[in-house]
Image 1: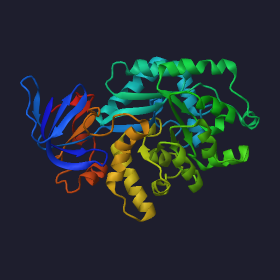
Image 2 (image 1 turned 180 degrees about the vertical axis):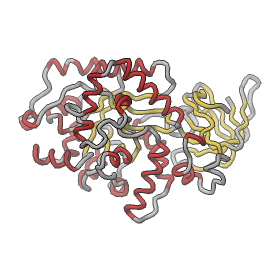
Image 3 (image 1 turned 180 degrees about the horizontal axis):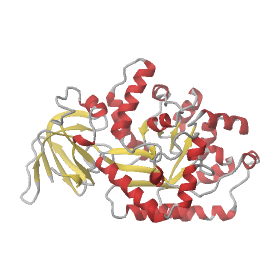
Image 4 (image 1 turned 90 degrees about the vertical axis):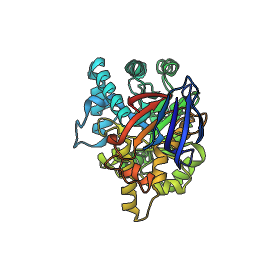
Length: 396
């Protein structure tokens, strides 16, 4: 396919190119230059008036609880989403799998329509949970990275005693990892150092929630004498999720040992648990990506996520934030943290992208494309969504 006369955001710096041509072949960006001529067998589409941006990477989700939207709205964080006794846990255990699947499918359709081409899901429910999600996704074009887990959690006493993972639970781990892309661990406060060390020896992606709430940070200190983040690093994770209450020293330690942090600002806010300090994180040298977290507590919309993060950060710090940095968190940085050829428009990268209508009511006239995308664009401005070189939503 040859896409002609299109504006785009190019490369890892999202450089604005006012007009060029793009050749897409075998699901990748083959050539990007102004004077490409189509071959006789090649489809050619004139895309003047459109702006091409990388497909969004929703770097942290829990779509399994899609059926529980706004349940227990006024409850505490633990009462809502604690992996052992929270409402989410009860919903996942007591709902028929086909019902869970139907609503997970709805969430995937919603994400595609909003320009999300890849999502990274922390999947509960052990092997059965992973298999159910894979079955749900089997007929959907969205790209997924599934991080499963053994449904095994320890209490404070077991963690203090540093008890290892039982043999029957340890046997489940390789079976789960055969079916998914890695591990998404609930947190250090549910696992001893011995268990985290056991998980750290696995070869696929490793990620873990850390320092999401004041309570979880305090619990770690009281229970082990160590910060939650330092204990989470025992997993040797490729990335950490949240870090809303991580200290400066935690962030500096993390920056040296991980690829990046995935933050979920709207989810944190909807739980009344604060806002991640991206300024502090970036000063510590952390690469940041964005996620929308549990569907139960937040909608899977990266446009809203960017808009909220940009403005609330400037409002709190009373300093300007470059909107390009926010857009990177939804695209380029996710690909970098995951070490995948996604989230970027560049020769040789996977052709996952969003075609925006520059003449959309909320966008025209576009004086600053980064600001326009971050706080004016929405699902209504999307003309089409492409995944792996194929149009999966809308049309050109």
